[in-house]
Length: 122
Image 1 (spheres, helix red, strand yellow):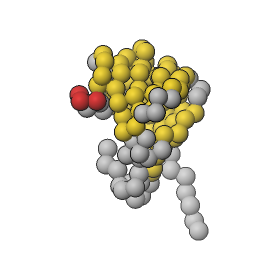
Image 2 (cartoon, one colour):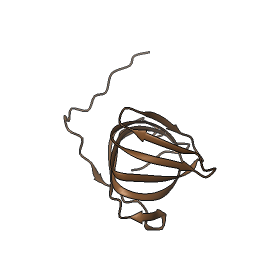
Image 3 (cartoon, rainbow, N blue to C red):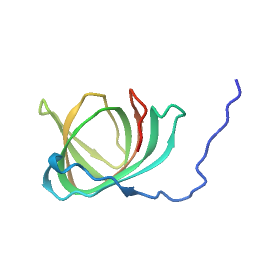
């Protein structure tokens, strides 16, 4: 099998607006942005970066997500009440179907890999 490395020639991450739905925002006015660096040919695996300013919001995971926190922090609370604090350098996995509340005290930036059951168009 012949494989090749695919590299993004851009040297800078270019984040674009990725609004959190208003009905999911619980406090503050969080502003989220996303950058999609790469996707698999079937668009079921996506890699990129995301950031967000201060606020609290709910999130229902419609994908498996693997992330590395690059900057800032967030406090994640599961439906069961389990609290997890993520800071720069922490790795986390959010499985498909998980429902959580994100509290971002000031700012957070992460690198992510998503695996979706169906092709993802972002």
